[in-house]
Length: 227
Image (cartoon, rainbow, N blue to C red; front, side, top):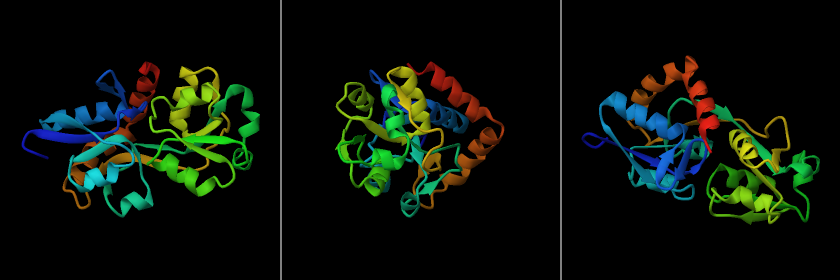
C-alpha cells in the first residue's frame, strides 16, 4: 500500500461485483474495497484492469490487490495469492428462455451450429476453450453488452457464473439459466501479489464477515439494487 492509498484493480464489467455506470463504479467488490480502505484508515484508488491483462497488471504492481469477482484457479494461484473465499459459484449456461431445454446439458450445447458467446481472458473463456469442441465460439470483448447478443439472436448461449446468470435473467426476461446445478464450483476472492504482507491483513478483516453472514447479505442487497 502506498502511503495513505490502497490501489484496487477492478474490471468494471462484471455485475454484481464490479460495474461501471457512467464512470461510477458499483458492486459488491467495490463496496468491500471501500470498506477495507476505511478500516485501514487509507483512501481507495480504483485502477482499471481487464480480464486478459489482470495477471500481467498484478505482476507489474499496477495495484495492491484486485477486487472484481475474481475466481480462484490453480493457474492464478501459481502467480498470486488469494484471500479466503467470500463466495462460491460455478459455471452455468444462460440462453433465450424459449430454448432452455435445447441447452440443458453440456453435450446439447456443444453441437455444430450452436453459437457459444464468451468474454475473452477470464475463467469463462478458459472453460469454453477446454470444453467446447464442436459448437462455434463467438468472442465478444465487452462483457457489459454480451447478453444483448443472445437476446438479439446473434448468439445462442453463454456459460458464466451462476450469480451473473441470476442477475442477467432478471435484467432480461427473455433469458434464463438452463441448468439447476453448475458445471463447476470455485471461490471468489481478493487477488494479491505472491507473498504479499496484505493477504493476512485482508483475511483478518474479511473472514469474520464471511462466517457471520454479512457478505452473503450484502451480496443479496447489491443484487436487488443493481439495475
